[in-house]
Length: 291
Length: 233
Image (cartoon, rainbow over all chains, first blue to last red; front, top):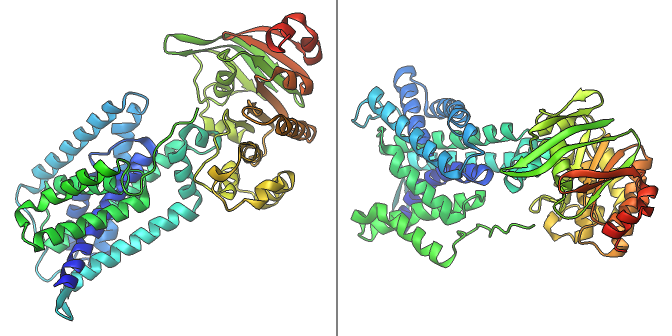
């Protein structure tokens, strides 16, 4: 029972973590809560669904295709909706983000309709593996595996590559990074591309897990992932991973001990409690402005 | 080498710089001195185009750089050591130096880094540590080393003596002269006018956003007005 719920929780939490990473990276660099991020996750799920339904590709190709599509979409969103507002008040960009979010979900509603869509029968052969008393599905293993590989890839990019180091530099100090010869605009585009790709992968995985893709799936998933990012400490990449896993596991355990009608409230209750004790989030750092 | 002509900068309604003109010749150390708020840092940030000018023209090696984005200006060979050092606190010393070499893709980056470590042995001892664990003097050395990693032709130094013990200040100024002797032109912004005038060839005095005096550094150092206002006499 415990193992079963733990696996369920980790699978759900990995998806929250994938989405939360996009929030936290974008916030880390331009201090914007990209409220359209949940909708990028939703678009990713639809792209995955289309690829599987019409091109009969396997799940990995679907994930890859959705990632590439959303990467480009993320870059374009930043270019049209946020870049011009970077020097104006933070509220303007936030409102623009909400606008993009509403636009994308309405567009999906128009194109795909209001009903949730499922994947074609037998698109993914699912097997149950018995581990002790727990039934673990290959789908859950797929989710945990793909999320782990993507997060390790992200960690490599951020820690070891030149552009990753430029990302860290820019998130620490925007102007000084420009003084290093870093093209800050390009770093910001790259950050949106990375975050959107991870959200897209999360979208396909969730679509497969629940066998449902709908125009409004980005809203709650986006809010919870945002809660996960804040819980872990917004701006912190390990924080987003930890926050996502924590929320996923506690949500599943909350449901298991009988609070299923409070399913969506659990994430936000934890968020409020943690912020009361540690306002910067679990791994967040206090921002001190030195003069 | 660098020519600043009638540059004006506003921060909202405040006029930070008004018709500032000066020039720097190849090989010189030029000092900009003036009180707090005179606009010294603004001048450096306007040259780097972190702060945009509302009027005027900045020419570098016969090229108009007034509207170039900051990273293009670094590529042309103008590097800045910003006020308060501004090292990347969470990144290691090594990574900070790598960021300094961001515009470069040649294969001499490694050997240049060795040279930085020879010049600043303390950095070599601490290369794996996050920059925030360094002392103020070490951070200043890191900020200078980082700026040198781009192989600048013109180095802009903003208050390198700020917050440092007098002995360290001597050492930093010694190093500035060495950097200059090895062929890098230097624009030095300082509140410590005494030190700045002692190593500079020429200097400009800034007051509330305007150049009020200019000339040979030694002459300025003996100018009674300057002595009274900036050298504490």
